[in-house]
Image (cartoon, rainbow, N blue to C red):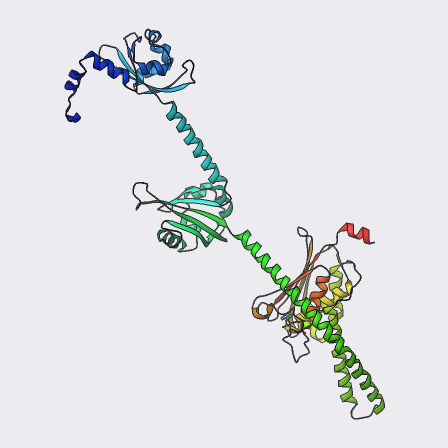
Length: 497
Ligand SMILES: Nc1ncnc2c1ncn2[C@@H]1O[C@H](COP(=O)(O)OP(=O)(O)O)[C@@H](O)[C@H]1O
Ligand SMILES: [Mg+2]
């Protein structure tokens, strides 16, 4: 017979047999108590005895107040099931749900369900919830979730740190669109919906720019996705994203590239240096011969001879060759030089004092920003002069004798370095030759007296002094040279002096 057709009367008739009722009460997995109008237990089924932890003979005759304490009056008043913690003998505390059904006769039917396991699970769930919440909150990556209208529903501590919005900002009025440049938010959603970027509903390591509260742009890597309704996979509920700030990584990459470039440069220099040394020695002797014989011929011909002027040119050019050769030797095998503590500012002043009277400097405005009481570096004053001289002369040549040259020094105490910056207002250095200017013989002044040795000799000297030199140039904004030298440590002074 179809059970839905069993009327309550029919059921009563079926239960009419005492055996059936007894059977049912015994096996039903719910504790049952029959309580009289004085709230004394008259009957308890097997399950009820087990739940309250009292045997049948002892349980019958107990009052509900004995069993449920202060909860009982409340149960009577409120009528909905109450959670009561019982302490049966032999077993640990049990959480029991107790409900009451009153009858017309003033008796009560009381049912008990042991919900200890459910309770434990609830606590465990809550614990996990807190754990995941803490986990998300403490991530250094920004974790952000938003509903499909763009309202923020999760904004963790990492997001606060990176983007500068407070939680109140985020949960208050911040729309997720404002975290990206115009149009980017829609683009990201499109990418998440397509299955080309890590599967449908997912986006993996997508590089983008995020905008902070102050309007700064930060390079980020975003991995995220769409959360769908569990029952309806086509219904989108929210989007989430994990943002990694790429600034630190990009900085490391740049430093690595810089180091790599410097390594290449020093390798190249070492190779060229050996070659140059050989060539220089070969040239030196014939050059000395040319000069010696030119001078002899000059003397023999006498001061009034028509060839005197030509001979002067010959001697002058030969001298220039000698200078080039000596520069070349200097670059390839820098003669070791004595070192002392050197005041960089003083050397800059000395260099400028020598140069400023020259014709190339008449129309050059020199701006100095030299840090006072600058720490000394471990170097050689004459060599440093030579370096500054090369740089300053290059700048004035680039500006064609007209423009502005700024020279600044500062102590970068966090790095233990002295940094010297020279910036000119000349045409700058084109990108594709920026990597070659320190190469020996690289010059764009061929035919105008350029030898291409100034920067390579300077590079060798600076390297010998454990320093670095780097050039920067933006088109039309002049050239900048940065020199760094380790600061002289006080201990060194004591040992050496
Ligand atoms: N301040 C500067 N502005 C523009 N270009 C520069 C500057 N300094 C150096 N250069 C470039 O670097 C090249 C190499 O310089 P350097 O080694 O001193 O040789 P030279 O001055 O004899 O050409 C120069 O020919 C020039 O093209
Ligand atoms: Mg030069």
